Image (cartoon, rainbow, N blue to C red; front, side, top):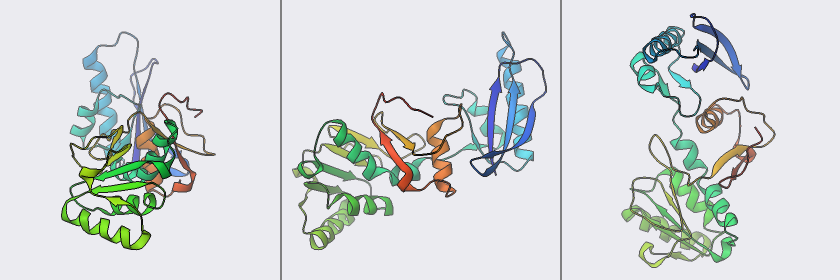
Amino acid sequence: MVGIMEWKMERGRRVRLERDWLLGLPCQRATVPVGEGMRERARLRRVTRGARELVRAGVRRVLTQAGFPCWEELKEAGLRPVETEAFCQMLAPSLALAALRCRDRRPERSAVLLSGPGVSPALFRAAEQLCPQVRDLAVDAGEAGEELAAWLRAEFGAAVRPPDGVEADVTLCFGPSPAAGETVFRLYGPTPDLAGFRPAVRGVELPAGLDRLPLLALLWEEGRIGGERLNVLPPNTKLLT
């Protein structure tokens, strides 16, 4: 079960644990009262108490507000964040096309580089989706990447270039890589770098106060939102929800 850890500026000492629902997904919400002028040590004790209550309720993963400063205490209690890597890698084609739109580049006149330590399922899907849409596609993923490039040429008859022969408009990294490009998305690790772009979901009002990327990753993972309802917003776009 997933949990929500939040603190509120209110009086009181008791940490409240309540059953809640997150777009149809059952969860446990721990609310930590934080008074104005409260000492850091007292606040950490309350956060630790709330974390322990979530664990006793069966919670292992937790959502928080963006920039939540007490993750060390949550992890020591046995809680971990919702991972976002798989979600961000699923969005790779949409991120690439959104970056091109943002710069008024037509896909059929643009080049995209896919980079990774090997050909993962996510990299393969991105190559398969982008190859018919862009002018040049390059795959930098070792020997497996060369095999994928050969398959793409046979399958689509498209211009699949060697990675050192392409000046990429967009680079999608599925693992640590020195790859460069005009816009580089690093879609791996605990904190993927989306170059300022933000995923959003159509027709769904998201709960306020929660870090959006882990929230969307959880809802996608649990089948509450599908890829067809997701879009990507460019940097500095105002979010409506």
